[in-house]
Length: 535
Picture 1 (cartoon, rainbow, N blue to C red):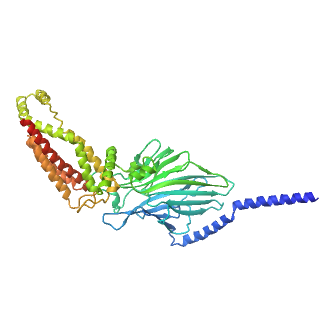
Picture 2 (cartoon, helix red, strand yellow; picture 1 turned 180 degrees about the horizontal axis):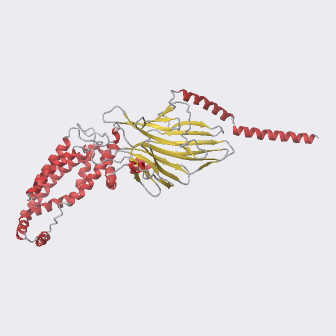
Picture 3 (spheres, rainbow, N blue to C red; picture 1 turned 30 degrees about the vertical axis):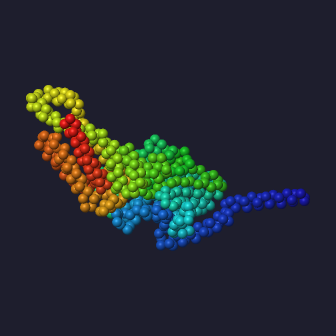
């Protein structure tokens, strides 16, 4: 009887222990305390001017996050002004009645919190409504909490570091239940296609516009732009990839999601809504959170200027978001050379002068061949005129005789055109570099030139450029006998001056220096040729 009683006591104690343990897992004191804090914070959040928004800030970024979903609805770049000589900092992301540009993220799937079809988003809570990175800290972590009735705790944490435009978004999912959870993380960028009139940071006065729209990188494509027209016409993307990123681009600035979830693959997608909003996003494959465990899901996002060196370290091909157009293979090395010169000189304007001198020194052999060919053609002009008069009724014979003359005198009639074909790609690549490199945005030169990426406000540089071009044309027109061709050549400086009125002042500066070098080289080469001819 005593043994039986002891046995029942042991069974009772064991059962009590198992019941206590189960209760502890489902509703631990810490969870109860956290849920109590959650209820209190939830009440305070609702009472806070009914805005449910928090502000997160480091040295370079100021973010406004909506607690309903945890989306970034505003982002300001502290070190950049919206306009030249303005006191207002540049607002890259915003949410207003006429324009929307947001960063959204969340968890979808069977146990996710977000359901856009039902317009369901989790209402997170936080301990404060303002967070700023302390100068003595290496990072700022801003957690937001959401508790489900079944005891599952979702924590969405924003992680910012000093002087960085890259931030992490981290989801911590604490699953105290006996059921495995399944979620998918998504991140997307949404923007109104039609720009309001006051959005000057997107516009450009130049003839060649920079790209504004979506872009992505995948396992099969390093870099691909996707226009708003493609999205609005419902040519939606649906790409499966193991790595890559998605982005929204504009002149000088970019916002990009870089997934870091440990899943088999991600899906890149686009969508369009009737209120003229284009969306590009990604979603991960299913992520399993085992029972009675905790899992962390991470992703990174870039919000800021297109700083090529920093972006290249964050993700492969992310630096390609700097839109250099079709001549990117020339613009990229030119910018690297310009950056090296700027590190030495300290002024972007004088760096442009230096790179112009370097490029003209490299192309000097072509310039020499050009003017030597022009000088020889000028000396041959009487003989060419004789051939034209002799065979004026036989065009084919005249062409044959002229080719024999060129061969005899060792002259390439196209030699004067080759340097022009060489310089045009350099000119265009410099153009794209100047209007696409954020380092040159609002970069001053000297005197009245306060922004090398913008036009000369007083049109002084274009006029100087036109005068130098006119001087070159007058010197070169001595080789042209046809009066009509001479008139066309004399008109070219006026036409170019009109075009250059709206070009970046840095590009006009390059062309002025290039023309001055041309004038000097022309005099040196032609004077040497005259001396050789006399001998």
